[in-house]
Image 1 (cartoon, helix red, strand yellow):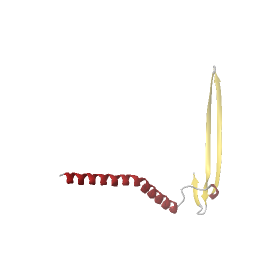
Image 2 (cartoon, rainbow, N blue to C red):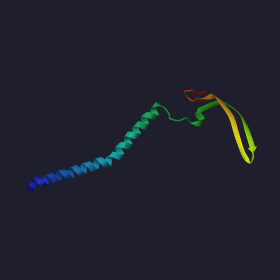
Image 3 (tube, rainbow, N blue to C red):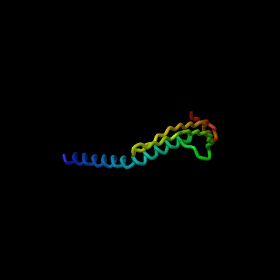
Image 4 (spheres, rainbow, N blue to C red):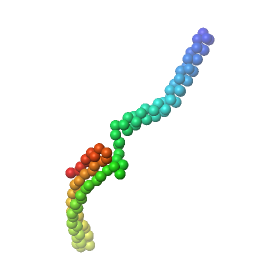
Length: 101
């Protein structure tokens, strides 16, 4: 009976060592997977544009009026404003157009 208890204890210690090793390796495995995902994403295309790689051509028209009132010690103001933006961007090297209405 004593030998059986010793075997169970040895298996429990071995299982604890294996579980500890798996938990310790989890960080490194996670980093490796994230690195591979980033590498694949970079192969598909950039996620941002460098400023030197973009040509922007926009026209902005801004019109507005401001009405200020003062009546019996109470002042107020109202602003009516219209902004219209037209144009777009092209990026190098593909020169994909990005336009806004």
